[in-house]
Image 1 (cartoon, rainbow, N blue to C red):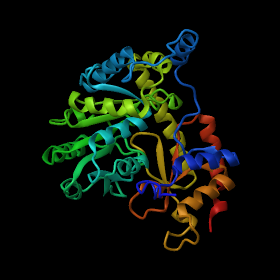
Image 2 (cartoon, helix red, strand yellow; image 1 turned 120 degrees about the vertical axis):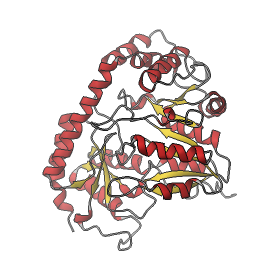
Image 3 (cartoon, rainbow, N blue to C red; image 1 turned 30 degrees about the vertical axis):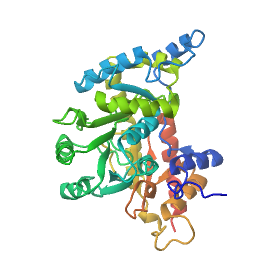
Length: 397
């Protein structure tokens, strides 16, 4: 048999989804894969029930149902002040995962380079490699998650760099990039003529006093920003797989074509139902922020009471916990084929009953003393998880 693809030779399965399978197998509370255990808004599920017997049940137009795109255009204008043309500057995708892949494939040629901040969501490096491009990593400070502007410029001015990927608010760190930081990124993108591909799925999950700024609104950035997002986190419908791309018409013309050949289109009945959510007023988003602020408080106070060291999220719903005290060593001292944080997560799922994600899957640097947990869960789930985490002393070596 001829060899398989060289691009995918070094791929593993998703560590996040692998930890979900381990959690399911041992009955652990799944704080690894970031999906809630509470229901979507009732108005949304009620509308879906109304649609079920009558449809639409056939293909929607490839780049998304007209009323969905119009409602999304209105929502984006309300929050960002930018008016995206529903006909020319919006495409609806099968989740933000496809949105990112379609965007990367529209921008990158084999041999190009893409700048990624580290830590990063694991899909970004895979997307880059699948496009035949090479990731260039810029580390965030382990102290305050800031970046060194000189290091960033050195990365962005390398020959062959085509784009930068920006996750804001960031997974897994919970960082919210300040307007000043975004201005630095924007000025360098303009200076070196780069695209900025954004992942903004947590745009409405922000904790005061932090604020979300759309980099596309900064000078010179509308034409070179490709914004990817989804309805998954904002409306607690991760299983609906409704994502989208927003970009200037010349860029969107290419993204539409790539999307068409990747997945044809998103699910017609789900788009029809989701129009209801896109037309929610401001009270919904205020309530969403209050809900997540409450969950963050419950979970982080519980972690403090347990004496654990962790990062305080500014946005999104993830916490990176330092596991150095448990004595799992470092990758240089680890026996076998698993990194210390991987083994810790397996042991925690099996012996403590809580599933996390090893931090090493998010870093280019040799970081193996962090694990990621999320808190998008009901109060009772979080309290039970915290009760179980009292058993972490079992894992001390």
